[in-house]
Image (tube, rainbow, N blue to C red):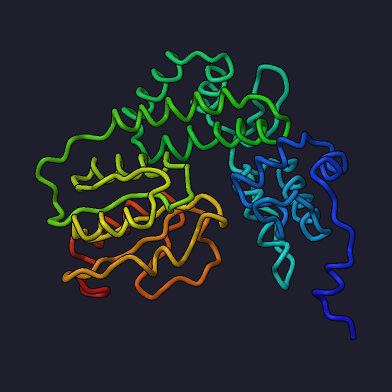
Length: 322
């Protein structure tokens, strides 16, 4: 009987150019999907040309299909990676309000609330002043969590999907991200007398560059009087270990946007201190992974804020230990 591995090895493998022609997208888009979301050739190693096996192409087709249905790039990649390996069919992701791939100078965001549509129009016009003003006004009126879920995420999903699929609007995505980060930093109060005796350490996994959600989380926690220490994006494992030892935090929240950047060994190697540290795995990248016993997965911002507050304020310490 032929081994499955041998059968796979005998199947033809396609170049980046060939796969791009098959899918009708630019080769640069394929490389971006591989670099950002881990949806690339499974046998690629340094020094070798990328060659896509049929299973790799199938994952790309699943991602493309989800994008066309309105999913964000991260959601589409997560769906493709899960669906390609799941024993049972996986339902395609439900697109968030505002996802879409519009043409011209407008974003198609059906069903999105008015503030999100207004932010999208200002972003497409590259009107940074208006984008900043809208975000500040929205945060003052609704709070950081609501603005993240109802205003910023729909716009980023629409712009990000368009930039990855159609190859344009990358500059708009960067503008929105930078303005959103500035607005979240501005909305973060200085907590001089935190309610939690030990801080919450916030950082991205070593390969994760998407730190904006962490700044939203920090702002929301600070507005509840909780002290944090922000490490930001792509924190090397030795730096994470050193930060835990230096700060003796009550909790560590590690963010991963995509599965390729959600390395469970990073969680395993974080040291234990004299006072136990609770670990929180934040972001969609951790979905479906088997996590160590001392790690709790937090799937969305509102739940993350409530759960971290509950734990560090003492309500959760009887259950998990301090």
